[in-house]
Length: 307
Image: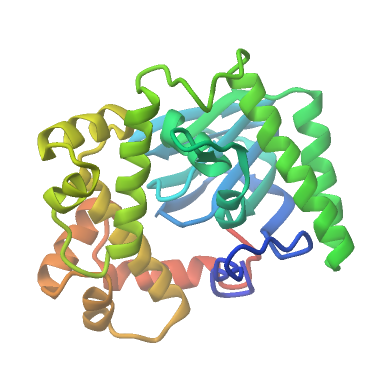
């Protein structure tokens, strides 16, 4: 993040991947002391933690995740989460935020029937987050990412991006030792993965207007009922719940980066009724949007990144 506002996700010209682009939003070693609590939030970036000492907790989609030294956590985009210390302790950790967009243009496997980019390969089979024991490879790569990002020139950024790519590949290899990631899922067939991937892309591109499950299903030539079943099987969320979470995510981004009124923000994210927007926001985040905006701007002031 910049000093006050969350950074915009970097953009790339069609078909181009810039090796030295600012893909990594922030990368540093952090310390948090009890009591500490960063409230629920969502963002489009991917967030990585490697806990070096102490302990912390995270609520990820309303499920508590307890972390201790040696834990690796990667939180995927559009996931409601919070970070806090729930016991007297000091937590030291390495922390990275990065833009997933460039990795959606990197393919490990491409064919007419099964073409999955790196981000789809990570997000569709695995859902909301990874939580596993770190190893020397992970630790070394994260150190390299932090060191190269600190130099902040195109050559060092390119090296940081390559280390990050290697980290993601190592994560895939570790979690799917048979390397069948791009053709088989534990719970979904390749065709079902394609359905979920398309539904996510459709929502991301049309969140600012009315979205009907039938419209998505019609594009895929399947029934709305079947699409809803497959989507819930993977995401543990209904399509409507995911649409609402994604819209609130976009609203928070506008709160941080613009001076638009909440009424205008509500309209821009596809929620024309501002009262419905406020109710929905409170249901998902736990605070009304006006209170949340004041707190999030205060909590992020003078900090380089979350949490």
